[in-house]
Amino acid sequence: MTRSTRSGMYATVVLALLGCGRADAPPPDEGGALPPEAAPPASPAEDDPVARWAALLPDSLRHRGNACPFECCVYRDWTPTGDVALRARPSHAEPAVLAIPPDQTFTADSGFVQVTGVSLVAVTDSVMAEPPGGTPFLPGDTLVVLDYVGEGFFNIWDGERVREIAGFWGAEVMPSHGILLGGERYAREWWVHATTRAGERGWFNADSVARLRGVDACG
Image (tube, rainbow, N blue to C red; front, side, top):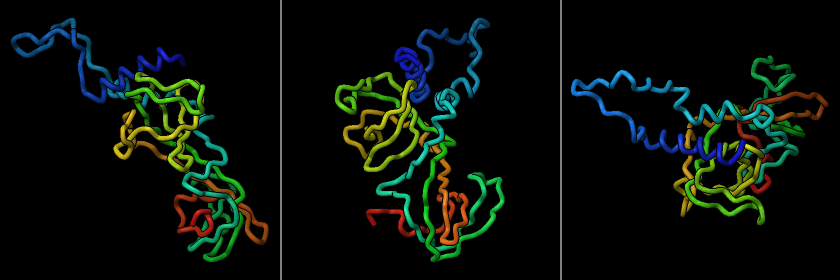
């Protein structure tokens, strides 16, 4: 996807955000009806930039291999404070094959984040490239948020490649250089592969279990 294509989609993003219509649209007649030649309104899907970008995002980029999605997150020995149900495969459709009881330490040896719902960042002001010498972001660019890395950094997709960048959008960033769209739609599944002390193995969704000790290397 070229920058000009992204810019065109960004224009649609901004129009959708501001609720603007076409400046050259014909006015209604005296009875309040649109002239016969007026185009029909766009369907909700066609007028939804988040849905369009979600459709463009390759499935391969939704799978964030080895992601550990928060500050100081590390795969190593963890100790649960509640039962942890293990499944043969990383899927809620799989039945639990065993449960790790509370306070029984196990090894979290790998994991991944599956992006199930995306949000966008519409760039509103120039952002310097990271690392230096790379292509900067310019007003008109649209970015898909993939996963949080930590220390204020995110993996994003700019329509051509994945880049790790410092967050430059949101009310807590001053000055902000972007607008977050569809933030409430962002969703993920964080799956972790575990090996018990007895050598039993399985997967569990780390977002749906009780607190785990040892996950945070800074805590």
